[in-house]
Image (cartoon, rainbow, N blue to C red):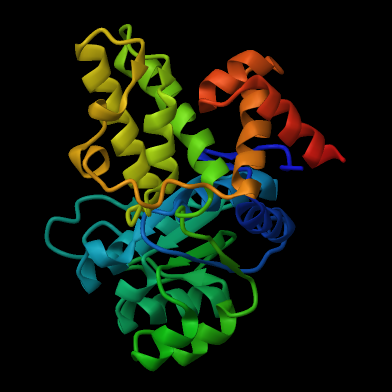
Length: 312
């Protein structure tokens, strides 16, 4: 049977592959060791990092830094902070990310884009447990949990010369692989409806309350190179298009053109996927077999058949 849903911010784990990642995250969360999340861009690594923080019991803040957005000097300032007068324009003391994450979690995203200089600063913090503000004269003792994220495996980063060897040994053991969205049909369905619900709340006016089975199936079989981020955008686009027509549901023609015009050659879902979707729909509709069948475009007897197969 499909396991109970685990909500990770906007990432809902229902599929077996994602549930494994969530289980590891819960196991690693209380441990005072750096964790590395590996997965494609947009797959939800930041949301899983927040889940780790929430499960860790740490009372400090969750702070995120993306290494590829800043120059080395600015990144050093972002991480360590600075004292007043440390450089031109530094009129007051500013705490860096390490300090702001004291007692909490520091999420270091896009590890492949971090320079070796920036990695050295992080390595010192990991090894010595201290950081020094720019222009400062004393070390600050740290108590911030580190979570790294990479869209490429460690070995590949090493082969490309993008990772300091010493840093590799600090983060190689507590690794969680975050699977791509493609193929996780039950997660796609659950996320699609969560994004539909949140759009109705966020956009603040009446709009579609359901997704037509044909449109949902197209969402299920698409490969989603942009993963969760792309799926959310597609559902929100469909919500707006349907709301403009005052439609009660998102139909296929409401979806972005790359979905509406895609070939339907891969629209056959296997038996296991149909079973998992039937169980998800049954749960979402508060065990209403008729409404669950309408959700997926199936006969109510099919919902019963898949439920019996899952429990038998």
